Amino acid sequence: MARKAQFDAFDVRERFAADPLGCIRNLAAKRILREQDFGWRPWARLPLADRRAGTVVVAPARWEEKFWESLRGYLQELLDVRLASRFADFLVGYLLVVENETGGRELRPLRHIIGSPPSGRPQHAESLKQVLSRTMVDDLVASGFTRTSACEEVLPKIWETIEVKMKPASILRMERRSRKRTSETA
Image (cartoon, rainbow, N blue to C red):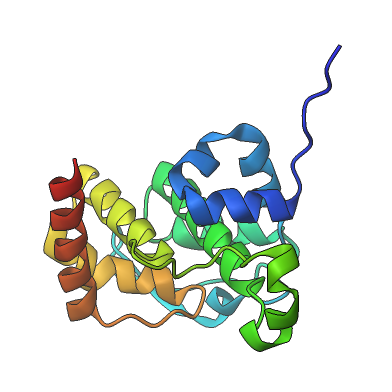
């Protein structure tokens, strides 16, 4: 009887960098993503306007919860439960890829042995951030947001939870280019 291959965080990192949507469809990979801990929680100090209540909510410090659960809980203040879970998977996968990238100079002598590490910024393809942003915008539009409000209001707040600053106008421009690129290749 053949044993199933065991996933670890490095396998999930490589899969997520190559195909984030396929990676989060895999239950074993999703379980590993949800077990990651990065030791910091920038959303614990961010005020958040609750779109349902129209009031300002200060997110509680969720240090007792696991990283993914805390992030999802914060995103639920802005989004519905399904989108909050999906986007938490995206953000944790993004952090797993980006946080584990190593400096090029340090590994240059070993590249012929170990190859280049997977990158959050692949060449000649959409970057990981673009793929995730496009997918998040599509999900937000499907849940009732306009494309403009998704790009200019909601998506910057989502990326800000992990301290990734994005200008709203550049998100809208990036999303249009990404949508055009994917429609040309389809």
